[in-house]
Length: 429
Ligand SMILES: O=C(O)C1=C[C@@H](OP(=O)(O)O)[C@@H](O)[C@H](O)C1
Ligand SMILES: C=C(OP(=O)(O)O)C(=O)O
Image (cartoon, rainbow, N blue to C red; front, side, top):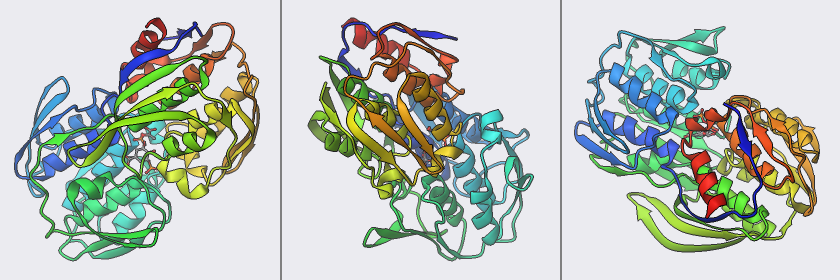
């Protein structure tokens, strides 16, 4: 599907942040690991969390879904069945990496597959620690899906300093650790999203910015119902849209504001974006707020590389904001962007170049020469089958004079199925 984006004359109104993708995956996995019946409210309707539900069903977990309400009958750590078919993780790296930790820890013989994009993303990062723990795991060319997981002879304890600041890797090791008699410890030098340890209430200790998190078979999976907060990463598109569109005022309600996740909010504020943050509250264990963003003059920023893991999925749309900021913005330490649904550094460089922005691609980031009067060229933007590229291009195209096209625009359904409707509603209000 090719989507036309017309700049229009306004961008205002209220959107409710769609349910968080990361927390939807986790709530389903953790509910399955418990021995209770859990109800998850505000479960994401996007394609990626549905992949997690499909895989759990194949592992013998009973799931009843009614829109955003999902009821899961937990089977406990030892209750998973050997699946009769491969576990298809679709486009979802989170599904493949977190679920691998569980099935490898449990020693369930199975195969995990994914679409072309997921099959080109390295899984070596999870295979290394899982093998060190005594799990049987292998993949195509030793690192790609399809992944094959086999039985194990009991797990060995592990103290694992994370070589990459990745919440998926951290979560995979900790979830496998739930099957180990002796504690598995993950040492995290730079914080990444903490949804796993927060929702599972895992034991952790902080040493300055570093953290050690432990899991073992003796950890009780909390019996709990879940309320998924709104997705900060989806809300970020409206934060930037509202900032760069003249005269805009957008209220984004129910936005997840987990401090290990919302660096883009603080970065935009530092760049000059004006937010009103109200109604601070908790959705179960996760902080949420309502945000109102109004159009603001932006200044350039040199991003602190230590913040990259806390805004990894927001970097593409932050690059869009940087195009409209006075001066030279620099992103460094972001080579992880090259390992997402597509190489997001190369893809954003191509998109911004098509728009006529002045940028320099680096191995681990990008330099953007911004201009508050920047007028992106109306263009046909490729999405690279990557939901975040499609949505970042759409926000960029709102500042063009003419209408642009986004190719393969349906890929937004991976994380934000109502993105195009929400955009139209903001333009029509
Ligand atoms: O743990 C998670 O839910 C996620 C972690 C991040 O990936 P990495 O941990 O691989 O950086 C992020 O890009 C992804 O969208 C979701
Ligand atoms: C990278 C992403 O997800 P995943 O790794 O789960 O495919 C994303 O949603 O931007």
